[in-house]
Amino acid sequence: MRPVTRVLLLLLSLFPLVAPYQLIYLPDWQSYFNVYFLFVALISLGAMALSGFFVWAAIAGLSKELRFDKNSNTFTFIQQAPVVRPQRTDCPLTSIQSVEMEKTEWTDGGPSYHVGIEMVDGRKFTSGSSWTRAEVEQERDRVRAFLREMPQER
Image 1: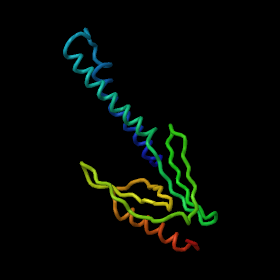
Image 2: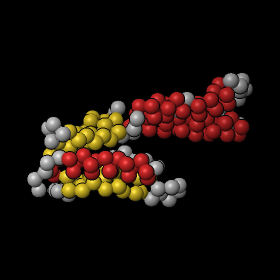
Image 3: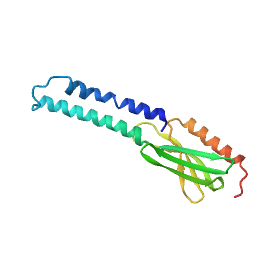
Image 4: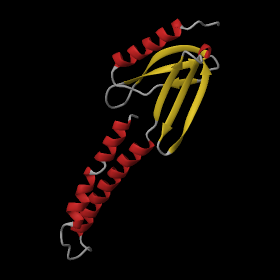
């Protein structure tokens, strides 16, 4: 997840908090033991839960990074989030078996696409997803062109 997306999600988390402020804090409630206040409290609770979801998505959303280093002849996969210790996997470029574009179908909305890197030992690494097929195809082709340039002994 890009830092801009994280900041956007944090800013979006502030918007639902307007409901509790305007429904509970601003009015001068004479009694909290009535049906109207319980209804307002339920709406406010839902708004606070939505804000919490946006905050959690901003701080726990994973970022994936694929690095191909020509000088050290290595492929590096890094997966990280602000609340998770980064995970790093280094492999020689010669252990890459295939580079493919993969499609994920969703029950609602259109499909998403990502680049899948399959290793000789069966491990699979995926890039972050995108909604545009052409963007992912372009990335896949760039990786394939990079790997073709490398002198490989298989």
